[in-house]
Image (cartoon, rainbow, N blue to C red; front, side, top):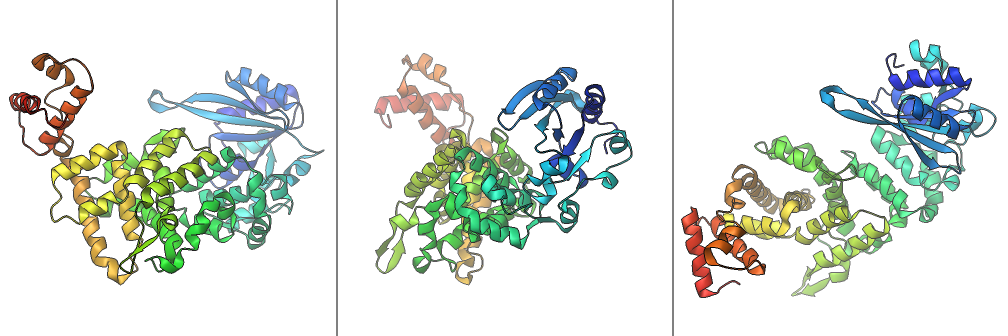
Length: 487
């Protein structure tokens, strides 16, 4: 195992000192066997878990957290020093053994790959673990075969969140769900309605955070579980007959999600000059460990969800005027129900509101710096996300020959806008030659909304390269005040 692992050594000391059997179980042991890095320890003990967790927290100078007093689950959080003076938080979860033996406890777990254990002793820490594994349900075999298999038919009735967790585990581990387990999920899928929005949100976020998880979303949909969680997708599925995409509107939505993942996987090829900047943008944490990349995938999947309610026919053609605002209304309802944070919701909202805007820009013969400036003025921090989701929206039509010309043109336009933004940012996002204090002092103006409007006018003029220096900026403001325009 880990010969130099501080936490395991301290747990071993606790076992000897308190004369208690400690078993390593669940995700920690599974990831250890798969040689995956993990900072979360799962242990089961055959005595008072609460008391021993408190003692352990004092021994290692960690923090005690009560997770679930009813089911006797407790956590100890410890920050360990790493290189470059940084610290890494590790969680040690203490669970009190259910039943008379560790085998009884494992029988109550969800999937075979999580229903394995090993008794913590000198041999397991120093010499290794495989020969000492307690594996009553064939978890080791399933790890080798890379499958997720239910321990028992009752696992989903015991905890319906496991319906979704099966796919999360499969996505994170890149495993397949065993056929019988998948049938059981389909049979019990309606039970997901009993699960709180917070718990569902956590699983969905973990699935979407995996780089190539679109195939798992398709599986969740095929098994009818996604419709149980988000019934708002049902009208999209019925929109097949009047939508341009050969797979219908829902097929287009799923292909947009796939395309977004492909764009992310090919940043170096698509945008070689700004690939690092784009990666940093997508990897930025927007809330509680959630990357912007994850929320953009959510937006890509649901960007057209309002189209069925906005369908009109004009001169024999199908139109969806105002579908962006209708989509926002529906998506906000979904995200509220699933307890997405305000920041997550605002990010998705802005991307959906403006996802058609880059297409309008790409139709112009020349995309001016002023047009690019206006785009980023309106989209702010989510402008890059809007561009990438818009590109995914177009790429979703790649298998349709009649769309190839528009896709190439749009891709070229997106590349130009991104390059102008990152490489020539001073042009499309100029540094103002004056600030509010300069304007108030030079023109004897009071603080108020007028100052903001004047600064907006100045920034637009700089984006058009009409003004080159501070003297010109003062002259420009003076001319506006004389004409009283744009205020």
